[in-house]
Length: 119
Length: 111
Image (cartoon, rainbow over all chains, first blue to last red; front, side):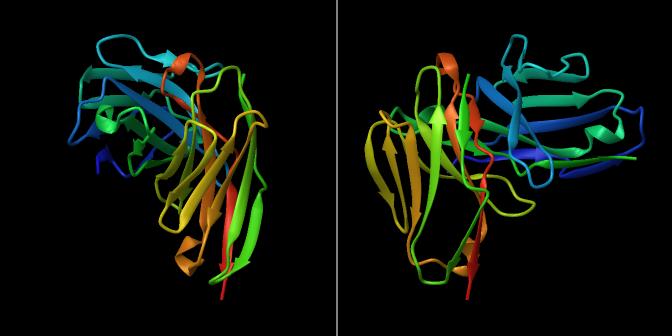
């Protein structure tokens, strides 16, 4: 099946620094990728839709200046958490839909996630 | 907007059958999916229902009733490795492809 990778898998940073997370579709081209955040024992919360070659679409309540998204190619989207604070500590997961899936299914493939800890 | 409700926890015995329910309210419907997530891992796709009825994939089945705003995931012949969180998710409005997840159901399989 389709594979989505994320890098790094975990990161620890100091408060006030910025952290960049990469999401790559390894064997398909994804014009659209999605970024989610998940706090412990909670559900996945959609943060934004990353669109190749255009601006990301942010969900209500998500600060676009804090969570910068760049989708520079059909296989790479990046999420930069700027001026990170301890409350930004979370599990960040990206996903992409394989366009080869067809219309009878709706498979989204998720990256393995990045665990961010801000001290 | 979209809202989904699932039970927070379900417990079952190894070898048994368990059903996890999901009720939803959406403005427009573009399909409902089920995902499994083990602790610390990424969600993995289990099944998708775009139309009413039952979809079966191995030990997993999923049912959808659009008129009732209801779906369930059925797991047969439970194994210990099935202990995980299970999420139902609907596609967002305007057929954008984005997913809106329910709060998840933690399934604990006991020997």
